Amino acid sequence: MGFGSLFKVPQHNVFDYKPRYYDPEKDRRRELLNEMRVSQGKEAIGFDSSKPGARIKGSFKHQMRRSSYSKGNSALRVLVLTFVLGFLAYLILIADLTPIVKLFMK
Image (tube, rainbow, N blue to C red):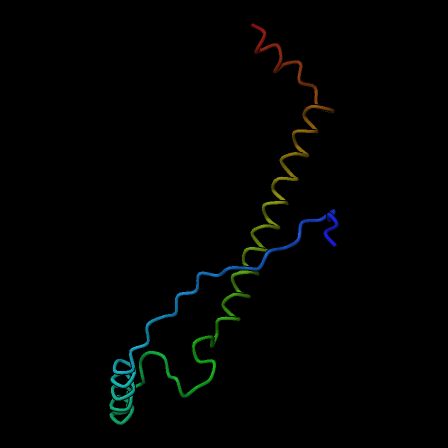
């Protein structure tokens, strides 16, 4: 039964997924280098695959710090804009602007 529909039927999603190239030799070299650095008493470099979530360590804190900073800027921007618009409304509605108008009329 082919009844028409009031709404468009959604089509399936098509993704263009290209997997990253994985080089096991490079990974092995990095692990050996990190083992040598740790045995010498130095800090390991690069991504340490032995710790789950090592790549995202601190990223949530960084994102929250950036978000709170932008919220503070936004609040300041709204405050300044409100002040400027209020001042302009005061000048237009309440203040006596006849001397300023006379300057432009000459």
